[in-house]
Every structure is written in C-alpha cells, then in structure tokens.
View 1 (cartoon, rainbow, N blue to C red):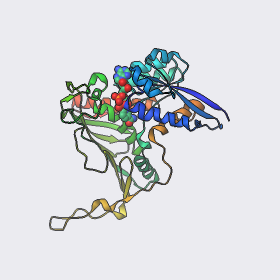
View 2 (cartoon, rainbow, N blue to C red):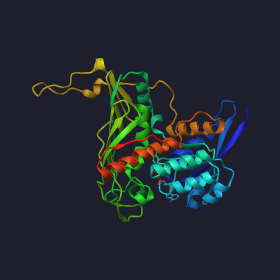
View 3 (cartoon, protein in one colour):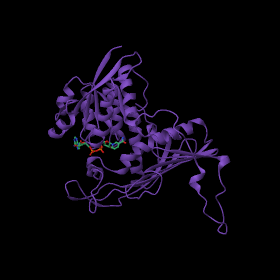
View 4 (cartoon, rainbow, N blue to C red):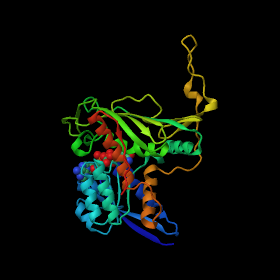
Length: 379
Ligand SMILES: NC(=O)c1ccc[n+]([C@@H]2O[C@H](COP(=O)([O-])OP(=O)(O)OC[C@H]3O[C@@H](n4cnc5c(N)ncnc54)[C@H](O)[C@@H]3O)[C@@H](O)[C@H]2O)c1
C-alpha cells in the first residue's frame, strides 16, 4: 500500500465550475488520503491552478495548491493531467497545446465549437497515446441515475419516446443582474444554448434510450440585448432558445425544449420523461417517479365529466437505495482510475465530439431548414 501522487493542472480554476466542482472534488479526494486503487495504493491529486488574475489565484490556492498565470509554464512542468474548465471560447487551442505537451486531457463540455475540431482533438490525443475524457456529469445526478436504473431494469417495456424540458429565466441585467457569464451570449467566446446543452442531451438520450439518428431543430434569440458584468449593454449574437425533434435508433422519438427565456413551473429546471409500453418514468436532477401500465388512469375524460384528477399523485417515487457520489467527483474518479490503472472508460473525447456533433447538426438544420442525419463518428 503506497501513496501515488498525480499532478493536475486546472485552467479556469477561478470560474464557477473550476472552483465549485473541479477544485472542490479533487481537494476532497486529497483530504481523504487519496483515491483507493485496485492494488491498494491511494492516488492523491496535487493541483496547479492556472488563470489570468494572480490575486484571485493566490487567494483561491491558499496553502493547498500551486498556481501560475502562465499556461506555458504549467504545461512545461511535470503535472500529468490537463483540465480545461475556462470559458468555452479558445478551448481548442489550449487543449492542442496541452496535447503537444504530452498531458492527459480531461476537459469540460463542449470540447470544441464544431465536430471537426472536436474530432481533431480526440485524434491528436489518441495518436500521442494520451488518456482523454470529457465531463459528462448529468447521468451521475441522483434523479437521472435512477431514471437510467428504471430504464435498464426493463420496467418501461418498448420505449416510445423521450422528452426533455429544460431551462429557466436568465435575467438580462437590466432589472436584475444576469446570473450567467456574458460569454454565454457571444458566439466568438463559445456561447450559444445549443452548443452548451446539446453536449448533455446527446449522451443522456443515447444512453437512456437509443442513439440519435437524425435531428430537426428550431432556435431563437428571445432577448437580443443584455447588460454584461461591467454594466455595458451588448448585442446577443447566439440563440437562447433551442428546440429539437429527434429520431432514435429503433424508432423512438425524442423531443427537446430548452430555453433561457422560460419560467419554471415544473418539478425541476431539467426534466426528462420516458414513455414505454409497460410504463413511464420522469426525473429531475434529484428525484425520479414511475407509473406502470397497470397503474395508468383513464385520463381522456370528456367535458361533462368532473376534472380535478391529481395526476401527480398517481406516480410512485423511486427510492434511494445506494450511496450517492457527487457527479463531478464520479467523473474525476473514473478518469483518475483510467489514467492510474487503465480502468475502462467511456466518456472519451470521441464521446465529447458526439455531443458537439448534435449541436453542430442542430445549427445546420436551422440554417438549411431541414432534417439532418447523424453520421457515425470514430477515431
Ligand atoms: N458540466 C457542466 O454541467 C457544466 C456546467 C456549467 C459550465 N460548464 C462548462 O464549464 C466551462 C466554464 O463555465 P463556467 O460556468 O464555470 O464559466 P465562468 O465564466 O464562471 O468561468 C470561466 C473561467 O474561465 C476564465 N476565462 C474566461 N475567458 C478566458 C480566456 N479567454 N482564457 C482563459 N481563461 C478564460 C475566467 O476567468 C473564469 O475563471 C464552460 O466550458 C462551460 O460550458 C459545464
């Protein structure tokens, strides 16, 4: 039983994801004495924070982490893993640099603005013999994890459809400060709702039902002007509303309604419902409910029949039956084991590129006003 140490560069450490997810979970693993490996060793992550603001970095790092404002300097050092959780714009160039420096790559979604760029990163990392992965955290959330369990159990029978209803109201900065960084609304900086969220919908639909084979999308910019962090007015040049119809392998239908200009009157900001011949299941991020065929009410009543049926009460909650690992921690544990002991690993940069591919094809569908087939991707 030995202690192994592994250096992890976190570029974008001062950002929301960098601090609350990547740093927090890696420091938690270190504080517990490291991640237990198959051979009994413990793997302790040691963090090197990279960012542009020395003051913020020094304060964030404290005595627990090293830090630098120079990505070149970080990549020239001995740390083995590169995490890119800085703003999406510019990610391709930063990751290329990390691959050239021989670092294993574990990065935030979306991995690139186009499927070509995303696949070029996957191929470059593979060609250098580096381990590579993307954060695909949502199926580790308890609600969606239980939905996967329900689906895998066979409870749903033949799956007919999946419906994703997601989003909330993002303030425009006029009456209340905007709660998302302004880069999300600028194409040149990696913004756009479809690019951001299709990165999740693709793997969720592929694994919860079946691979996506075609997409037809409709997008809009509901709020065309916003106020940024510095109080300046700017023009939004990306979509903040993205709806899509999907064909899935085997014949099921997918529907995505996704908007940052909608108000929440549902169980959660993200809801996924799957309907099947033997039952249905619906989940938000934390809870999952089912209704079997034999418990399905007759809900198609005419106007002369009294209403008032409590549809919500007719569903049964899936209980918590096993311990829960925080989603980003689960992503890190899987990747660290993949690097340290070659453990099997699914969410590679090819999986990341598939997610970008769905966004890419949704944009093409809007531009060409037609259905787009989804071709297979491989290294
Ligand atoms: N997996 C998820 O569920 C999830 C959720 C939210 C965001 N994200 C992804 O994480 C990434 C960061 O999102 P966030 O919400 O933390 O954003 P954020 O704006 O809070 O943080 C971005 C960080 O990048 C830095 N940065 C900005 N522009 C930069 C540049 N040109 N070069 C280097 N650094 C730069 C900022 O200083 C900040 O530290 C994005 O790619 C986003 O798509 C993933």
